[in-house]
Length: 313
Image (cartoon, rainbow, N blue to C red):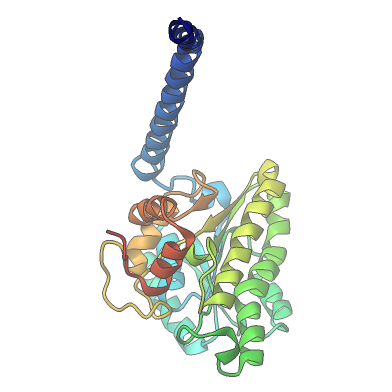
């Protein structure tokens, strides 16, 4: 009799919670389905419909300024923006390389170009840069210049670590802040402009043996996102760009592949995301890689970012 009573009591409890649990499960499934559909539609909007139409001199301003513009991603940005009709200001360390790239862009794209020689490892260069930019209607700023480790190394074992720290911080962090300080006021005054800050996927997680580089790129990401929140209402686009590996001298990757694109392929894709994403990987395979990374542990992600290989099954 006691057993029958307990059985009846259990059935009563089950019946009492059956309907709430059903609706909880149904609502959860519906929510997950909606989230999936939203992500798919967002991805379609960015990676299929995105066409970079916002990036035009008529909509933003005549000039585009690119730092670290003579090699790799920076050079690709200068060339692609010139193809979109922007006059180009190239800023880099080597005047000889600046002249070569400037002439090539002017000849190929038929746009006006200007060069400013500056070594971003120094901090006394910004008055010269400011003078070179005076009077220009700047629609786009690409804060691209950067440096990394010569090879992965423990922090205290980095050669000339004192000098290395100062140099890396000046190039990767100070340049972004100072160039933004120089260009942003006129964009705010005109209520239009775009600033693209080139961070790195290695700034999304701590990367041992590249610790200072990784931390500097995390700064660029947070700086960009915070600044976008401050100035979005002013009509300014500030985008944090977080690529995985691109085949450049900096990454020491010589041959482009699907997941390690050439600078030209990466930049052409990334510019299509401007105005659609404030934080972007810029390239569909890299966005997919990020989604995969988010499903794994931080340690696995660190290994992938450091070695460029995947040890997942």
